[in-house]
Amino acid sequence: MPVPAAADTTAQQLQQLQQQEASQRASLAQLAQEQASARGILAALRADLAGKNADLAAIQAQAEALDQELQAQTVQENAIAADHDRHVEAFSAQVRDLYKSGPVSTLLFLFGASTFSDLVDRIVTATEVARKVQDQARQLRAEHDSLDSDRRKTAELQASLTPLLDQLAQAQAAAQAAFASQSAAVSQLESSQRATLRGLIGIQRREAQLEKALAAEQAAAAAAARKGAGASYGSSCPTPAAGYVVFCGHGFGHGIGMSQYGAYAMASRGVGWQQILGQYYSGATVGALPEPQTVRILLTGAGSALVPQSAATLKDDKDNVLATVAAGATVQFSRQANGQISATGGSAPVVASVVRLVPAASTFQARGSGRHYRGEAWVDGSGGSLEVVNHVDLELYLQGLGEVPSSWPLGAIEAQVAAARTYAAVHLGGGTYDMDDTTNYQVYLGADREKPSQDQAVSATRGSVIEYQGTLIDAVYSSSDGGHTECASAAWGSGADGSQCSPSYLRGVLDNYDVSTSSNSLRTWYSKPHTVADYQGYLGAVYNSATCGALQGFDFTRDASDRVKTVKLIGSTGVCTVSVSLFKNQLNSPAAPPDVEFYSDLFGASPGHGAWPYW
Image 1 (spheres, helix red, strand yellow):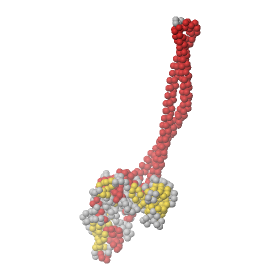
Image 2 (image 1 turned 60 degrees about the vertical axis):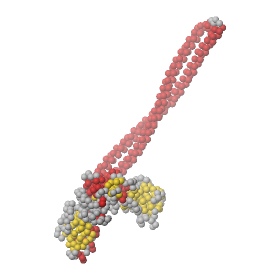
Image 3 (image 1 turned 180 degrees about the vertical axis):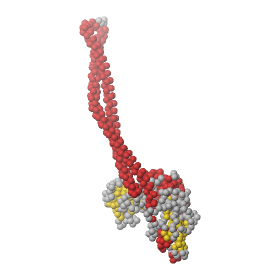
Image 4 (image 1 turned 135 degrees about the vertical axis):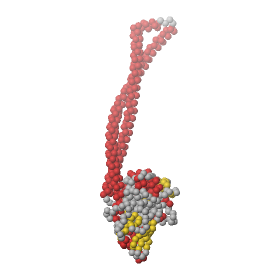
């Protein structure tokens, strides 16, 4: 479906830039890992610092509480001491007064009683006064001793807290220093990451420019390679010299369904992907897949050796683990005579009807092609040969398609992705694989082909498919339709009744977009001039000279899109009619020179019989 690539200096520059991009992405991934590790350390240090700050705050609060308690005890002690001093002073004054007055005063007080009862009251009163004074003195002493003990304990606790406070202060300072150092390391990593990203963006921009130039060069080179150096196509079919014939045509491929170059031109004019699909799939609508799908892709060039980029396991088709495989280890597969698959390179030799390589993460590499793929590799021998089938999520499969350049407008890539998703969904089921990775189905290049623009297109259209009256369509497409798409049943005989096109969504439509962009180098193509006699020789047994005589010229019957359906070979004695496929295949074979090539059924001859429009 896509125009094949040809080697040139632009392609070499693009390959070098892609290698630089891969290196930059690897550096970016390494920086991201280092940054993640550094951020983890930083988070741990932050948590440790927060814990130490919390411990320090708790102990400081305890110390402050003890200090406040000590101050309160000191105030209480001072009050008790003052009270004690007052009592002592009062007691001393009483004692002094007692000694001053001597025992006579006491006796006078006692014997001043008028009755015996009064005497007893006076004795009891004197005794009570003395006892109270003694009790107050004893209580003051006990309170003083208790307060003194509390003060000593508080002082001891405060003394024991002082080293702990110092230790925590040191730990806090160390944690703050480590945090500052780690913050600086993270900042440096982020700076390196930004510098790498800037370099990567520059490479991607240059890569996109080269890829866009290469896309145009590849198409021209593919045509010119078959027609001789320096060949180019003008805007009209050249008129050959007398006795010579030139075949001129438009487009590349079968021309049914979506034109990739037409989608390119529409997207360049700002048309959205849904409208692009509506242009090429008549009456179709956009629907959604009911659930995620896994596709099975036969990797035609995979070879027999696979290398997981991360640790992996070898399993059978019933999900039993058979062995483990180290990251980067080569697993060699072979098919035995009975169809069983043997695998070596893991933790143990393995033999099973199907052996699955299941990476824990990342991708695996197929040594035969050197390409990397996501998902799993199922190695099967039931079909008579060793097959490597990539089981991968449909969306990841779409990211690895190589149908259109990633430098194309996003709308064109989105339309291509939606069509490719639908095409893949229709082909799910049956056999050991759904599709292969070639133009027989869709060109699949794996994880190496993933580009930001295509990833964005997959994300923007995630799960979107094309439906006609509630059923998935067969969303075929080709590189260029030459200005008019072909009716599917007219080309493939799928139920046409002569007046109706089947299926209805693949009817032929006029497509002025396809031929409006200079990037489509095969919108017009033609052969070098050759004589009619030369063509008779090139056609060999396809032309029946015994019946028709010497070849004189060509005439064509056409369908509604002006594509050739049958070729009339006009001879000197009759007219021989052949199918367009037989005619093209013969002239595209080694029987004809390289500068005779037909890229589509939309062609004519100059000079020829019967006019045909030229857009």
